[in-house]
Image (cartoon, rainbow over all chains, first blue to last red; front, side, top):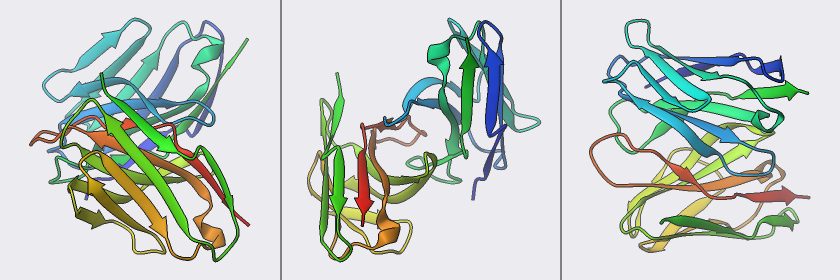
Length: 113
Length: 114
C-alpha cells in the first residue's frame, strides 16, 4: 500500500521566515495530496491540496509543490506568524482506494516571536 | 455548508466500562464516514470507515466497533474499555466518488481511560 513519509518531525522558525515541510510517497499512481493543520486540542483542518495534473498551487502565504518524478510534495509557508504554530499533516490516497487517505506522521511547527 | 459534530468533547471512563461516541454530519447526503484515533498528538490511525448505512469496514482489529444506523450518523462503541483505548478520537467525512477526496474532520473527543 501507499507509504507517506514526512520530514521534519519538528521545525522552529523565527516570525517572518519561511517554513518548508516535505513528504514523500511510494505509489506513482497517487493523484491527490492534501495538507492539514491541527491546532492543539482540535481536529485537523484542510489548508491546501493539489492534484497530480498541476505542479504548484498557491493560496496567499501557503503553497504546495508536487514533483511526480521524485514522488514528493512540499508545503511552503512564507512570512510565518505565531498563529501558524501547529502540527501539519500531509496525506495521499491509499493505493487503489478512492475512499481512504494515508497520513504522514506530522510536523510540529513553532513560530518564535 | 457542511458541518460535522462530535460528542462528547471530553470523556473520562474507568477500565471495563462501555463506550459510545457519536458523530453526525449536516449539509450532505450519503457521505463516506471515518473514525480515527490519534495518540500523543501525532499519527492518525484509521479505525473504521463506512460507505453507507450498515456498511462498516474495520482497519485495525481491536476492542472497538462502529455502527452507522443513519446516513449521516456514525457511532464508535466498546463493551469494555482498556487503558490503551485512551486517545483523541476523530470523526471525518468525505464525498462519495471515484476520485480521491478531501476528508473533513470533526472537533474530536478526548477519551481518558483510568
